[in-house]
Length: 312
Image 1 (tube, rainbow, N blue to C red):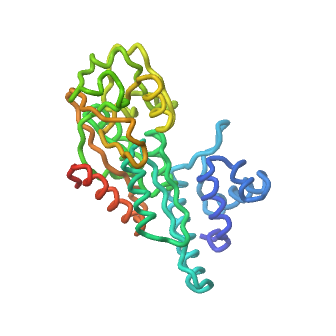
Image 2 (image 1 turned 135 degrees about the vertical axis):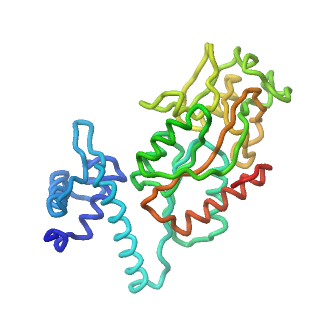
């Protein structure tokens, strides 16, 4: 292709930056260039390559099918270029990179902490996003994250697996867990060895909001309780725990709590329902896992096993 010869590394960096920012305007600000100049550079690259990299609409830009594949190659080229520059123009080892997108689980954060402690890196650029289920899938599909952490269940598996297949992603099983209720240590139900769904009726149910994808298939709470009269949707784990304490509320999760991260005010109680959470991680079929990502997965397994679960 004639245009390939004139393709520049800075054009590839422009594409990556737009994907990271989610908009051309924000990417232009971070690149210290005007929005028209950035748009023109991207348009020129698309013409040179003979493909449409971004779909454009009134809501912004999103990667096209060709753009998703192009981004994978662009990232590989830039990574290899940076490694070569570090190898021959610097005495320091290359800066380690890692991005994780996850549902709101203490074990994800614990593994992240242990990873950093064990690697003892002088330089790194890591990202840990606790975010919505659909955004986890999008992050991994569009190469913003190396891996994503989420759960499957009998209720959501068909929908989630279909979406993963469409986006070129693979699910890898980690472990299975029964649903637990998280409540404060002083909650009226705290003394119970297990609770039934009807026991929770008088108390506020706290759920992670899922934005436009706010359906049961994308909910973080594996059990969809019926006849809820008090529900509060929040966006982060700290707020949920504050409301559990402040309002005698509850949420539903895997049962793994970390006193190091969450203190000792919150406890987990088994919920008597016929449901299983199959927790795992997802990866992009077009991206090879980095060595740091593999170490993170190993840390995940160690953390989970420390709570008595068997990992795969």
